[in-house]
Length: 252
Image (cartoon, rainbow, N blue to C red; front, side, top):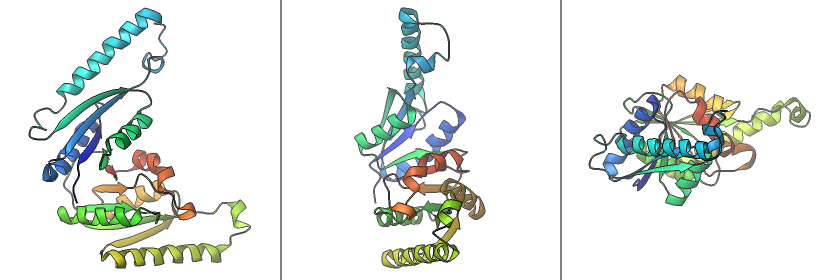
């Protein structure tokens, strides 16, 4: 397992320092290239409703772009000595630009923390049993072993709405849960991985949030390109998981 490139979004908040700490800790064993990116919203957003337009507005915006580039060039320079680092400023919608850059650069992972930096003791891997779950779980297991961390798996079971309940009764919900547990057992056995499996009904972001708190996770790992119908919902809920997570999130 090797992390060739790590994408590190920077917004110059305190969270960015936590992000940098995690990215540095992850990059050091592999001498990974770290791509720091700051995304600037277009002029109409950046102005925040101000009346500056035309040449004046464009000049102000160009000055702000230079400021952001300067800030990024100075961000965590000493801390990342010895690692290959690229610093990129992009314009557009942050989430779209970050995803596009990750795909363009074929980044191994995106580090998007939400809280402070701490030691790696417990990893929580959110799985949806989609096509890439096997590769993701194998990566997560090796990653956890490399840091001497305990691995926990979490899967959010679908909660049926009142409309769906007319056709899918409680017995079918139990069947869905049984199927998911069988998939988890088969996957762990096939990969020869040990880890506690936690399954709860509910919204994936809330299930991941609550489980991370319950097991005392230091890090949450999620997939970026998964889609497996009713059991595969992480791709749709990825942003919410990152936003609600009580600990840093690594998107693989």
